[in-house]
Image 1 (cartoon, rainbow, N blue to C red):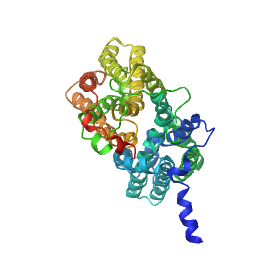
Image 2 (image 1 turned 90 degrees about the horizontal axis):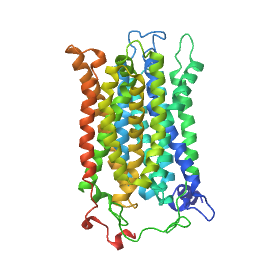
Image 3 (image 1 turned 90 degrees about the vertical axis):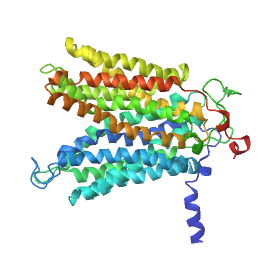
Image 4 (image 1 turned 180 degrees about the vertical axis):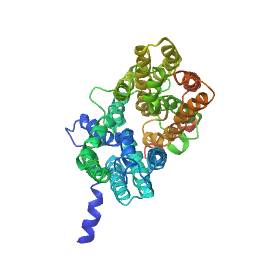
Amino acid sequence: MGSTSARAVPGLLDRERIIAGPGFSRWMVPPAALCVHLCIGQVYAFSVFNLPMTRLIGITKSAPGDWKLTELGWIFSIAIAVLGIASAVGGAWLDRVGPRKAMLLAACCFGGGFLVSAFGVSVHSLWLTYLGYGVFGGIGLGIAYISPVKTLITWFPDRPGMATGMAIMGFGGGALIASPLSVLLMGAFSSPTHVGVAETFVVMGLIYFCFMSIGAIIVRVPPDGWLPDGYVPPRQSVGLITTENVHVDVAWRTPQFWLLWWVLCLNVTAGIGVLGQASAMAQEMFPGRITAIAAAGFVGLLSIFNMAGRFIWASTSDFIGRKATYCVFFVLGMILYALVPTAGHIGSVALFVLCFVIIISMYGGGFATIPAYLKDIFGVQYVGAIHGRLLTAWSAAGVFGPVIVNYMRQYLIEHGTAKADAYTDTMYIMTGLLLVGLICNVMMRPVHERHLLSPQVAGV
């Protein structure tokens, strides 16, 4: 009897147990995805812990034995790197087991990563903190990020861009919740002899585990052959939109996959390099006019446009097409990056802010539009696994962007360039990168028919 129960419990997580019944509303699925993405979006706010974690021993200021900012910066870097690896490795598994099991695994890894890091902080072990948030948390980030993508596209074949945009919007906005929550909790747990980081990690780990689990409980997959009322799927491939499917192990060997890899990588490289230096850039380009407080407000504004752009641009792509949307990203992006030095030279804060809020909206929009682009090119059957492998472009961009901005700025300053002018060459480099991305996007063509699955295999 006990063995029968043991076999039944895992069945509750199987894909077959979450097929939607009659009357289920597909509009329940985006909130389930948001439960997950709003939680993992916390990664963009992890920097709020950096300064307090340099004072774990000294409390009010760093003391001998305290961790350095350079050491703590690796926590975020490891998490993003592992995110790319986990999404690439776990994508095929996710397609087999379904979103519920994947979301629960992600909840355990992401929430558990906070708990391991809390223990690392309490015993002052940096390696345990790397392991907790960096490795376990990074695995949770990668699995959670891709877990709702195929499900949303299947539920919304008529509006795949809008559907993925709604979910991935949460990833861009998660920091708006996590940042004040982290500060509030550290303030509540701090004392004259304690900074409150470990306790904050414990509480946040439990909160995120619960909310991500709610998403896993809510999520459903449609029955085979389900279509929205009134929707008539295309009978044959049109342009870049295919009605066939390409296996994940074949897709990544096609030129289309690598063109899209560079399209995403170059779009993200340009945006993520700016995000990391937005506050410093604003203050250095407009010394005396933009204060630290105003710069912090500018960063918050960028977060809002990052979030909104994910929904607006992805939804727009349903009407003008994915290729056209990325052409807008690259062409408009080149114009705006080239305008940034002009804004600094003429002292126009308004033009500077306008350029960057639009740039960051397209940075977020690139993330939200790429799943639908992959569905157009490779079909829906393996889109989750293909998306997972493509996200390695994000990991690469997470290195390229900050390195280009930071090292170019440092090189120019060391060679006598004023801080206000140090970003000029960097902006022109970003313009060049976007030009390469535009060329890759323009080169996109339908996948050759030899790569398509046979009808017998596609039906499996």
